[in-house]
Length: 225
Image (cartoon, rainbow, N blue to C red; front, side):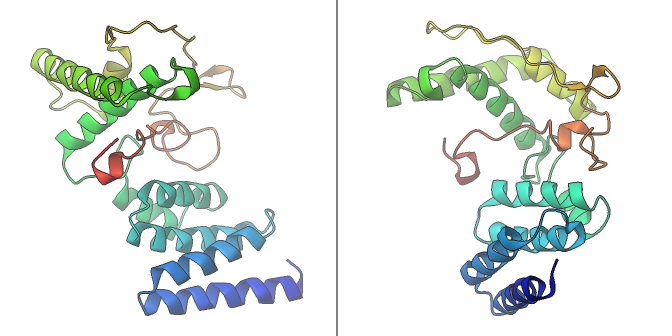
């Protein structure tokens, strides 16, 4: 970074820290975002620091998914440090924000996988009606009860459970076209990227917690979808 630009970004960063100390998360968010947006992409150390602190007001404001994305980006730039520690503390084995309850984490991962699979086949990736949305939610919830009634999840690793959730097919009573399954791969090694493999992006995290993390279905963080 050149001197003048660096000074401007550092002023935004320090002002953001002062806002955090005053518990003014909205102001801190704006200031840290300005620092991130203005930081050259080759200034890895500074950008990783700004991204880490950007995650703090995002968490405080309940925007957990964006906070996780910020931490993931920070770790790719600086694989060891504060961002890694906070990520490990806040995120579960699926790469989703932890609820503090393994059963809930399992259900949220299963629900998200099945809902995204369904929506990926719908025009525009959206429900057409609220009735369709409610019906799909009930179908997925019923499928979850069947799954846990037939399979014991106790003692299984997140990697094993992910494979189980992804292999579980729900016969939705709606017509839609199946899309080809996307297989993640490490092109450098010419091999498939498995959940417990170290992510090929360089973050040092398992693939299932980084680029292959389970994306939450929209609205799940607020208890709705």
